[in-house]
Length: 193
Image (cartoon, rainbow, N blue to C red; front, top):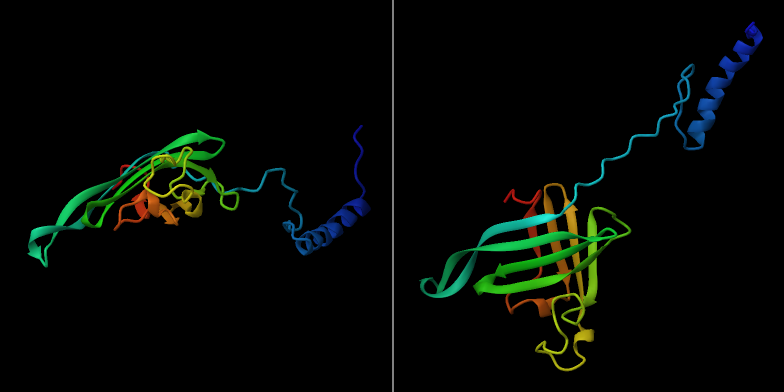
C-alpha cells in the first residue's frame, strides 16, 4: 500500500519553496515560482549563426580616368567577388577580388581562423602582407625587396553581421593596387546582391 504523506510534510515542503527560490535568485540561478516543479529542460540557447559559405557578388560603380566626363573621370560598373569555403575546424578558405577607384584591384586568397572571442561570427587572418604560405603570394616573386615582407603584417577580419558579411583589413597593402583597400561589405546570404 502506498504511503501517504502527512499534512506536516506538505506544509514544510510548501514553506521551503519560497526560500529555495530566494536562494536560487541570490546565487544567480533561475527563480522558480512557488509550487512550480523544477524543470529538467535545458535553457533555450541562441540559434547558431548560419554558415557564411558561398559565392558573394557586389556590383557597384567606380570612377576611372577617361578623356571625357567631369574633370577627366568617368563612372564604370564593376563587380566585387568573394568565395568562402569550409577549411575544416571552423576555419574558412577565402578568395577575394575587389575593384576600386581607377580599376585598381585587391586580390586575396588564404585561410581565416575562427576568432575565439566571437565563434561562428568572426574569422581572422594574421600574416605577412604578401609573404609566402597559403595567402596567394610568393615571397620569392613579390615586387618588394628581400626580407621586407615580414615587416608588413596583414590582419584581415571577416565578420558575419545581420544581413551582411564585412571584410576589413589593416596592413594588407601588398594585396592591393595603389588606390584600393581590402575592405568590402557583401549582402548575406550570398546571391542577395
